[in-house]
Image 1 (tube, rainbow, N blue to C red):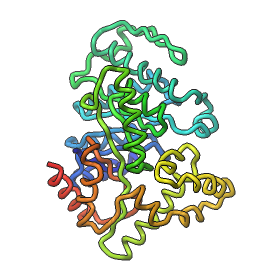
Image 2 (tube, one colour):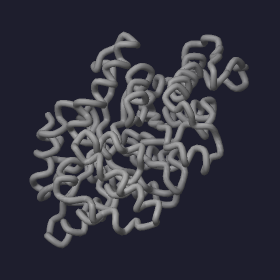
Image 3 (tube, rainbow, N blue to C red):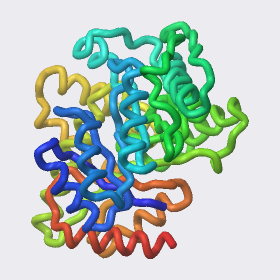
Image 4 (spheres, rainbow, N blue to C red):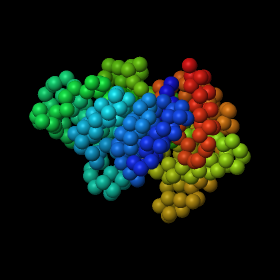
Length: 338
């Protein structure tokens, strides 16, 4: 099981941040699409910490044409010497339609076709096959020598799909190379909803879990002092309250018997009462969606929870903590995972 760290750096700080995360002991880093581009900083990460795997985790797919994202992935795969994974996701309807101004529905069918279109470019470039993808949402039928980068010496980059709902998760199993399990996950949701949907998709493509990568995001609450622990817990409560206020994230709550809270938290968000959301996140809520404890306990807790499922474990901790603490946790996690 490989351990990935969050790479939140902008271009100006990407080199330093990559070196820092490599020194802590992470096997790879994943960028998020927030207030800046998720691709550009990864080039600097690869240049200054070449031992790291790099990945977008995730880049929003639909605003980018499959051809654009295929070229970006190809370049990063080459530059990183085969250490890049293309992690993509759909985002939610409001952002796609109101922020990006494009169509969203039907998201699962559109994403399935999107991934197949990207793979059509990869197949054309790597194997010399004719580009002839004709779908309902995307059509790509022209590739002249001037625009063909040719075979990638490090192979085709894998495509990881971030998914939450059953249809999108099934798409991951059918056409993607792996699933990025959203941080807002619980073990009942993973075991009873996500994995069955993945397996259903894998059956369609005549594959098994051995042909598939499962990256699980783990929200962690810890701290070396009581004050640091409380600060971490409060930060995570705010994060979980934000997730819980979004209707698209209702399934993981329903899987642990917290579905009745979702409409309440959604209403509070619409009223602009963001500061109140965290107050609904009690100990049962935290235990369902987080791994929490003293720093020396975290590696064992993570292994117990995820070792039987995760090929890659992505650490998600939205608060400041000493690098030495994380280095110790990751060292123990790697040792216990061997």
